[in-house]
Amino acid sequence: MNYIYETMYILRPDMGEELTEQAIAKYQKILRDNGAEPVDTQHRGKRRLAYEILNYREGIYIQMNYQAPGTVVALLERAMRLSDEVIRYLTIKQEVTEPKAEPAASTATATATPAPVAV
Image (cartoon, rainbow, N blue to C red; front, top):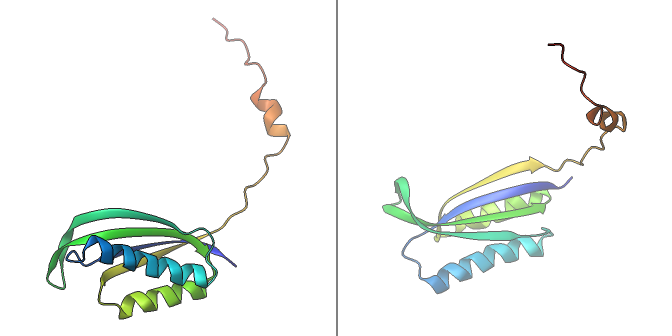
């Protein structure tokens, strides 16, 4: 079963723009090569961290949304864990739900006229 995942990761702040783009492309490639469907990436920019991580007070925030099997997430997180450029990451899983059709009776009650009010 496929799930929708959101992975947020923080890159070191001392990486230049070119290295940041290379890191983003590397993680997108891991997802696409292993069957992730639409990979939507948002570059959130450099922000101050809530607390110091590995002697860094700032980090470059990146968010990726994608749909994939669970094994792909394990590969992505392993690559991030072994990398020196990622200082934190978090993946959130949401189950894909099919939209439910509304019963025809509910539309009939929605168009009914309201009862008169006694004064």
